[in-house]
Length: 239
Picture 1 (cartoon, rainbow, N blue to C red):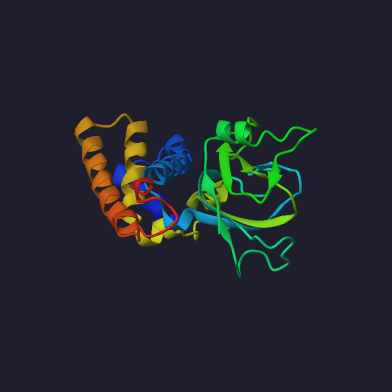
Picture 2: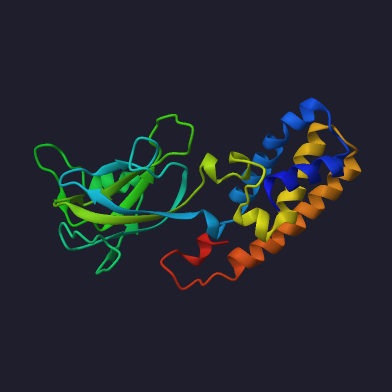
């Protein structure tokens, strides 16, 4: 299902072509996408920023807009660093060290990194926090400990979504992984939003919500329950 087909289906189901309803259809779809995205770890939203340069003496890096280019970060899945200083080929070819996630305050206390006596070494841990900067996309800070003592190369794999990931970001011919693989989930999620906007009959809203939740369950079974738990990401965080 492409964007044009989705909009047509929403109008047909709701039997509504009123101008304000039509102008709000992108919002209905985006709200449905955000609900699905927040409820389930979609593989299509796993991303990586390759060859993140770690600078000698620099402990924190902005992962958002204006930072290293990973706008829309929601969750860090893994961080790996090449133990080879200044490896020109990055971390794609190994060897690599996977870092353990720690609390941000732990890193501040364990590796304070004062100007007079910086606590530096090969990074073993990382912590994430908000940048405190308001942007159009979700943003995070990542801190390394010990503070890098040389220019290393790192790869951050993360779960994220930007405005360009939405099916509403382009022409009617645009398709996404979700709209092609599970169009019914996106459709019923959009119908819940659309019918709520119309202040429709409660029984119809409940019907659409049931169809949407049934679809979410199926989608979760496919994308989460069947995922291999033997990975660097704990199984408890996949549910």
